[in-house]
Image (tube, rainbow, N blue to C red):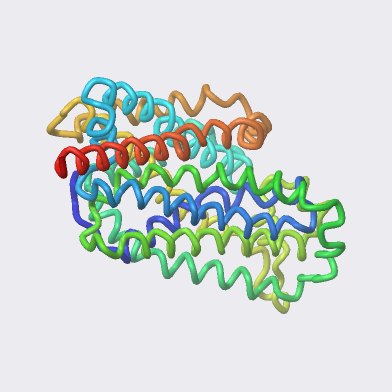
Length: 368
């Protein structure tokens, strides 16, 4: 499963992962927290996301040939490292994959195909993801590279078609309640998706141009963050604060509003198409990290043997971990960011700090 990918492909994977389900799910939540200032929150959180990327790259640059599981063993020792790595895999990529799969099932069965059983949707989706992981990261990276222009085209069509609906006066009054609501919305967005980018420490060693990884990582995050910002801006200015705040999928609702000369109407399929491309990449990355992480911890030579059992586990978990969509949104708002800080902030900082201390200690002993 260790395939080499280019910096361009890595950038695209990061961008689509970052946009993923946040671009469809989060605008309504952000508007409910920050009102007309929700678009400001997307900018604040993007700055935090870029700082996190610099932290991840700082850790990667210390161990450029090792993935996150191997870094843990190197820094924490073999057995403690393996235990921490196993906890990380079970508590983050496994849960993240299950949540992404549940998001797909909820959206498909509540919007385009309400009569379809959620289990059928999730099985079909996870089978495609499993096939992608079986084929390897190189194939997936090339696929993402192929579909990225299409996803951007779909987003641009959506944006231009909605231009007549924009009412910029809905952005007022700016910061009426101070910066506190903006900060609250920003924290949600930091946890979902920026802290989750820590799992790319499992993929960064696969990039063939090591010196350009940081630039590619930052570019991908900015692109993904910009997509979230644009959709949030449109949710405020086209739907209005009161309406956008109560909608679960504001971008999809906006697609239903489109009408061009009575000829082109209700093109919400564009939103669904863009979202499915990005969330497939998100599901793939999470599942790939889950499989490669387990194989690295236990020294399994043929990681593909884990694909089927893990696919079943993720599907079952997705159906039972979240009782309903309302609970999922509360979970995202209240729990996911503090939970993610353990693995996406404190753990990388700990590994980087211990690594630096050991480096200084070895340099001191050498000079002595």
